[in-house]
Image (tube, rainbow, N blue to C red):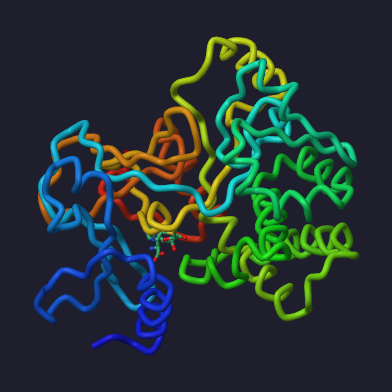
Length: 334
Ligand SMILES: C[S@@+](CC[C@H](N)C(=O)[O-])C[C@H]1O[C@@H](n2cnc3c(N)ncnc32)[C@H](O)[C@@H]1O
């Protein structure tokens, strides 16, 4: 029997996902609730009848992603496109505004727009077209104070909140499109810091057409974006990589940007994970098996640098994600 909170999560999950879910497999009602996603892996395996993963509600407040078939180490389990992206500030003149692809040097001159001290670049006409509405809103405001605050405090998620707000104002995203994702359960200091950032966002967007109701929805999403944003480091790139890497390290910035996804956000953390997400040349996320995985196993990823010691990991997870990690590695004291 689901608790009221579990039922609410399920109701919201189904209402958002029904429009995009490809199929719901038949399963006995003993499984409390589940949602299946279509993915490239089922196609690749030639088994289009059954999605390779399921999102299950594991208790009244939490969901996880589970394998619905066996995988071997190295398998690509699925790919996922981002819902919201933002390039790292230090690389915004070298990374696509939309897909975070690194730009070829000859693309720069044709795609560069500079307004209000912000830089907007695109890798292709397709990325420029899809971003048109959002860019139109974003490029009208002066983001210098907001960006300065992000740089000084080394914050990435306010950039994603900014981008999401611009998408909502432009009509490119609905204000409740991230409601299905889990919001952060953070310490009070983190909330007051987020309030300050949101006030700055509001004042920067003062002249935009964001009504109070939608503003409140975007405000609520700040918490969700904060814990669900992925830092994107590409594993492949162009020959300019060395130059970009040098610039990035000077700016203490290895990531090309950050992104929020739907399905990848349902993965729980483990300090000794069985899967990982990687990015080849753009913000398209690829979930790969790190070892052989049996049908029914939960697919967990590691939210942080797994080489850190136990105490450091526990602290980061408590402060940044609001939970105490009780994975086997942590319980063993490693
Ligand atoms: C990105 S979400 C993961 C999916 C989430 N369980 C859901 O229902 O949407 C991150 C949140 O999941 C929970 N979580 C993830 N891994 C966990 C773990 N190993 N132990 C306890 N809670 C965890 C925490 O509440 C965390 O803030």
